[in-house]
Length: 503
Ligand code: AMP
Image 1 (cartoon, rainbow, N blue to C red):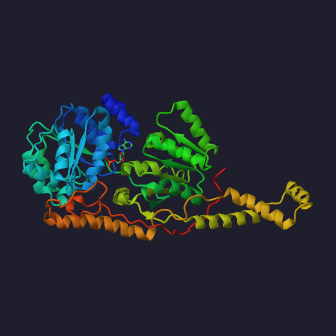
Image 2 (tube, rainbow, N blue to C red):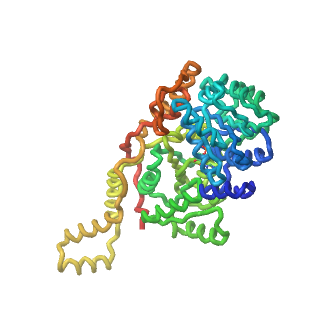
């Protein structure tokens, strides 16, 4: 299935193509047709599953651009408001549909101005209720989305949400509710605000193969490429598959890795069958060591000696995770699955870990000097175990006329070392021992918001704030969802690579 199957309007389809999305995620496959058919929906989907496009695309597709606010998206935090707004903006911009982002801590007047020009408003509950209650704005949207509804109730926003629905004039609206969990309070709210909703629930993954060890590394978003190259250098896979979410990412990463000297092929879902077969044959016979692929492209791929699977980005759901890592550890062999996650994704990886019932161990990315020294040990072992050939004796004899024998040895060793050059920064990513703290911080931040709940204070702002000033505001709906802690890792060596992968 592709996005084209939804028959979306041309400017929206173009935005999807520009974003590089090829295959709809599971929640998109289920929710988009139901929304396009005019249903209210209640969808159980966590963050990272592609839920924003799941409601954003059909909603934008059905808008007329009549100058009114046609879509209202209510989200728990300022950070999410900005994220959702960016995503909706990029899908709506070709259709001339504007988006306004509304949250506490910034100027009321500017926000009201933007709302007047917008087709979609993405808002946090507190500020939205203030604006509606004070009569400063009036809204009768055709579409209302409650995003991360459980999170909003956890944070004590039930009263605000109930009040907002009283101000919304349009009784014929279509209402879409997204929530990671479905506690009784959410179901009660759904009964109140949704009309004959259709349910979307994405099934949980099967459990994973016990022969696959699973690791994850925590890195900053911009460190993904460096982390991947370092890990390939260190782990030295026989064959590996690197999974990306988008075809565009596959292309970019494949050329980046090629430029780093690896033997790489990209595997696309929209490749012709013949071309695909040739590429897979190359992977099987070893002329290519690394496959960079999307989920669709690698589905059913059966290659026996894939030693490593890398998730460059986390998959959308636990089921895809199981499918991806199942490309290694085949035929009774052992395999290793490695996932790169940003601090913001820690909660999601923990959720996948729980779903698949496997233990994922976090590790530090080895530093440059650690990889260098491990390569050196390996080189020494290789030299010591190499058989001397007649041909080599002839070469040394010839050289000996002009060069001292020790210098010849140094030169030969230098030739070999040169091939092993380790690129990149000394340290990449977060230390494994700091990951638990990062996770606790993310969870504590969330609990704290919940505890502060209704007493969190929503007074008027004393000054205006820019979009970038995210961390300064401690108001409940404006606090970031995961605290970041930026520290480089020191890494620990745990195993030695077999030989150098680069040609
Ligand atoms: P969300 O769950 O909405 O926060 O989405 C998670 C990430 O996946 C965002 O960066 C989206 O841009 C991206 N994304 C959403 N749908 C797709 C898709 N079908 N293919 C590739 N990436 C997607």
